[in-house]
Length: 220
Image (cartoon, rainbow, N blue to C red; front, side, top):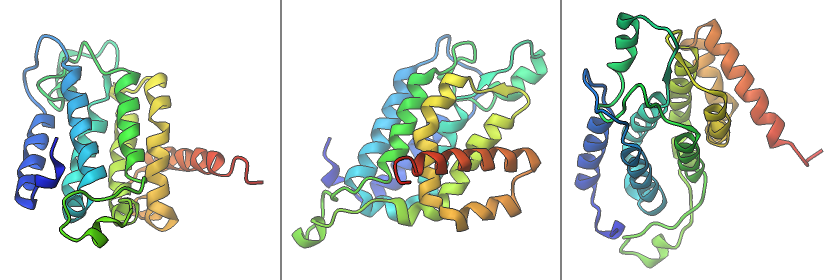
């Protein structure tokens, strides 16, 4: 509500609280609290839009939160055994009931958050009017972290115990393309070489083809 009052120490504590909210739990509530998901999105969105000056120095924390949000969208694959199900459910937040997974509405909200990172905004809370008047985005500073976030989606998609429904994947596309835009080809190649298996590389190549396809619509 008052972004100008947020200080660096406040932000460090806030990332810690959000991270704790998204950590896996052995037991879960009787019903999924979708409001919590959207409140986390709203909080991070406000920080990105209005306190970019503080967020820029804590990008690894932001990356972790985005990864956890991606992983929370997973659905259990049907007909899993109890042991296999628990391997997945133990990684979900306490307020997510595995029998009531998130829908396309939540993936749409996450996609909007990711696209916000590429939108130029003005920082609130600067003492200098000239400094506050510079409209910029997080795209450039976040470029080295974007692949790490996108990798969480790829890992979730390739998880043999999980599934991400088609409508959820479809709503995520604008956010995935925003990550691709921030990464650029140089940062795209790093996970291709160092951290993705064959299945992961296939998924990344597919995402990149779709990104380039929509990127050049109307430019030919």
